[in-house]
Image 1: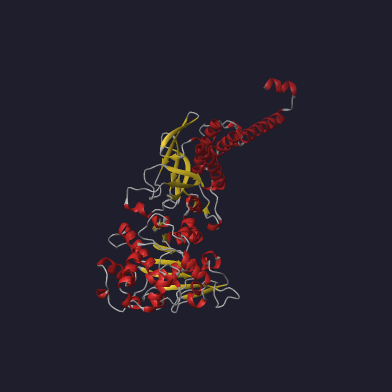
Image 2 (image 1 turned 90 degrees about the vertical axis):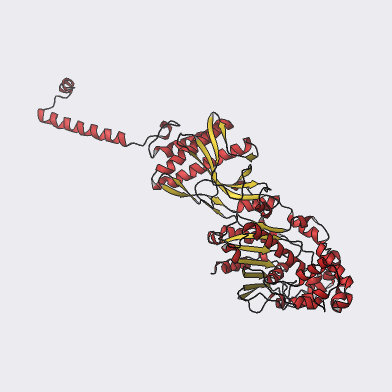
Length: 564
């Protein structure tokens, strides 16, 4: 170098010194620039150990390559490796790049799950699978308690269509892929009887990680039990979609058709009647028990249920239960049946009666379901019995079993544990529609069958001289059905108007008021019949009878539930 310099440049001695210093400085600056340059994505080999920032670069590289691969199996291997690298990036990248790491991890995991849903059997169990020679453990970790150790059907939540009756989708963004899991109803535990016959649907969230030995795992968990996940030294929020499982359950049901068929004598709904849990039972959460109206089913509560489960504050405080009952039978018999459903449910869930949930129940009833709710919170005394008979039960002619049935139907006490009630368009004073032509036609079309009705019929035949003449005439001309017992002037129905929720039960009323209706009301229930003295609040909206669809009504119900 020195010889060459002297030949080429031959500067004076002082200038040679300055030149050398400048060359050294330039070299140092060049080395510093080279060492600080960002390594291009293509230079990071897949699967190679990467530093904190390189993990995300590797994940992006794998993401791009997998998307361009036309062969399903190698592409799936790329999605798997991408998800692993992105999971590592979640734990190591700086704050500014964590959102990108989440997007990459979720996208690659979603594509991987899509591949597995097409390739694997429709029912999933924990096991090890191979994807183009790469092992993947499928792990169920702290799954919803309602599930047993049987196979599950899985759907990506974004692939589940949300029907209009549910309203909007309630989903929380975060780490992982939201899923809807389904399992056939179990038969090996008493609580199985409290799950819908269509099966159990619950939200789960899936993500990819590696174990201590480096084996890939596709992990699924209940995001409601475990809303966060530890990745490295930080906690990330898991993605959650609580509407997709409800939509998946609705997709499987035919209960609306059964409810209408029951009104004209169909017996299929009788096999469905009972109390059903929409969520895993929690002894510390207040049950909100929903009762539908005449000819309807629990599907009328789809939007309200979705709104409650979709609100984190309400979800943390309440659990939703639905009642299914055949609406063709008389109101008092339906009240007795609902009481039995609740008794059976609590015998399974809390036989000792010690759970906080057992002592704080909210009933929400629409139309006839509202009347049932009021009667469930009332003491009958002898009011109803005296409206039907002029002698005590001990003096009634008939078998002991038949008299016991009548006694149980006409005598009751407020169901323990009910603290609040919400009535929607409930005909507490009856409905004039039942007295009109359509009402009389409905009385003849609606067919009721029940052992209790047979018992009451035998008592009427054996005690004509002890039956209220007005009731006897009504029975012989109109029979006993839900429609006939909703008539305002039906003797027992009229007597029941005086029965009010016992002290300590707060109640709220909602009523519809359509222009031009005479008397004022929703076209089915008059305002006067839908409102009750002593209500904490009365809300009147410009709408018809289907108040369970009114957004203002539903918002007000949520406000009520948020109160202490």
